[in-house]
Length: 426
Image (tube, rainbow, N blue to C red; front, side, top):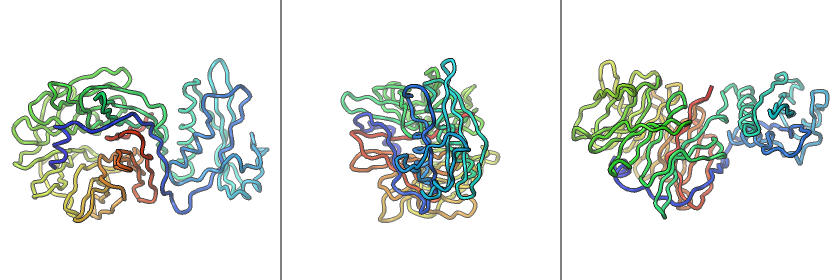
């Protein structure tokens, strides 16, 4: 509990900007083998290799193994050129082929998926189009379609990631936006003051975060991602922290100490009307909404040590929901509303990411790294990302909710932290 409050009162250490090159350190035991054939293209060299991006995307999930083009016996461009025996000999279970054409400055990528084992086409030719600058978006779109077709789970390769970078000399902080694979990073905000707790609005158009730029004290801001327009939402004395959007995007839950003690409040984003939710002598903070918006989970030390509690907004009834471990904090609710993700610490261990079934209370440890914090959940509920330490540096890691897939960003020159996974973009 004290550690969180100190984050709001002291500078966050950091060094240099780093490209987020995440790599799979542990995948499923028997990944699905898929061959993504280089897409046929008659023009000059394209700025992006769509087939390579698709293969990398699928491998990023930890559930697929892409066949290297060096091993391919042929490069079919149509169903008539597909010889299943060749791909079966390579051990491929699925085959993706495609072609790219250009017309009036717009690119069209057509693609087909085949089941090698059953020797049949999975779906007829589909086409996605875009400008030259959108070739990577087109590739992520194809990855999403292939992933969902094979697994039955919506793909997350077109989603985005927001995170915080910190520079030591000169001291500055950056709020960054990138593809989920770390490419195409761009700066949303640069400040001489610490930036904390970024969180996406449900429609993916805005981000709320904490900045210390107002008289060097914490305040909550909302920023439009497309235009950069910002609004300062709070300017109360003391703690202004941990913003959390309601599922309908109309409210922000937050932790404020304006009345003397950190409590949970809800603010109407349009009118800025505040409603106090908790009233306890202990420290209440880190709110997050239930999937249906009917309750708020939050961290409190009212039982002596940090644990997670739930307040039902209709009745204001409060109850403790975590009991496994001597420290449970930073709650996050899975999109289906069934799991509670948190920081968990048991005696003699460091902080790890854990998932608790909200209905049964059963808890399982997901991460094996050190000093884990700031979990954020993918919008399909299959994976989460978090900040951790590796090689003495702050890095990002990801793990599937069944703990079968683990991904780590190799240590770079500096630190990154505070990841926030976007919602789906329609």
